[in-house]
Image (tube, rainbow, N blue to C red; front, side, top):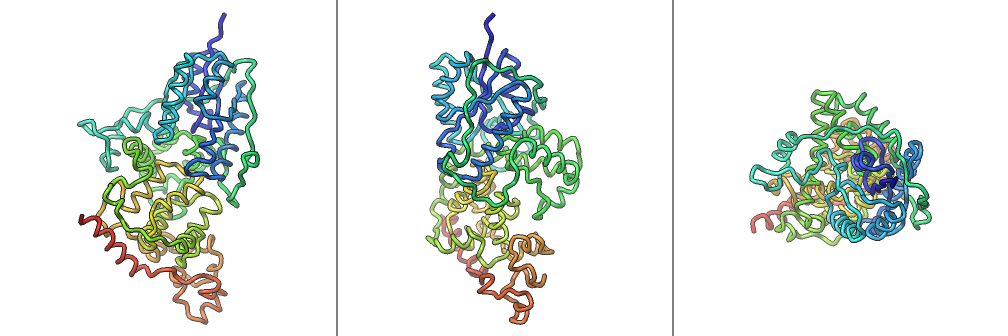
Length: 469
């Protein structure tokens, strides 16, 4: 009797719980072999990130162990999937390959090339859901069939999309016999070095532990706390790599009910929305969604950009967030908006420089989400607002988001002893206050590199010139 075998091409589904391609393959075949292709384009592509490669490798190692516990295996092949998957299918005697669809221009081009190569080899390809909360965010459309460019109507339509059931982790995963698994390379073997001092933990176990804790202890207060700097879930890296299923997270949060759950599920809708936008507007990956804003005037200011990257702008909230990013590979969404507005509208540096820096260090560096957020705050993307909106005052933002100064004091320790009433504007301290705080402004902590009020006027003038054309 001939055994029916299939491959499961793993990309951003580094888990065994709620894994649609894996479950679909198991339902149709006697033996199933998950495989990950270590593609050079993932390692050294447009947005290289040693931190994300580290998170990926650690999560893959845990996934391999989870599959082994169920009698399965994870094959690892080094090379492009359009070359490696047909070859592996021949080795395993696999007639079919299953994978979850994605939305970025790179992913869609890679997938098309791979499907074509599989077809030439006589292997069937099956695209399943698995990355987003809805099966395919690209298929959420207006009544006349057009894609959305504004979140609120998208959200209303998104809420009405029928959801698939959440899938249990398989108990057994029978693997084809005689197929070498292949070695998972180390970060060092790839010529990379982790450049985060204290990164968030990778892998499905850490993801599920964090999800359980958040839903149990923090979800109830999320509606009130999410606009601060401490009330966030920190689940975005796990969602990006698929250590956690967005669909399962949505279902479990919704079961709790209440304002906190509703507000949290709305954030998952934003994630699907930005996937929807990039799917239908692939040029956003390199340019403004509103093309007229490609004419915005940006400054070539390498010293200011370096100060922003390194967290030494003289504005404590901005510096705290940028230092947190370089330490743990993450920062709260409200902090992202504050530092994004500061770069684009106080320093007049092209938002794409900020996008690239975030993609270097964010463990959740997702092209759709990162690009969507940067274009939102720069005023070049979806949900357009008048040019005088979204020009955040970093001092006012700090007082609103971090009124007790806990966030700033943690990430900018030189300001730890600054009096609370001076913390948002430490340069206003008298000489006696600076001595008492053991923080001399201009030596221990920098003076502001720009004057916000003056730069706000300049930003408004630049945006007005584009908006009026």
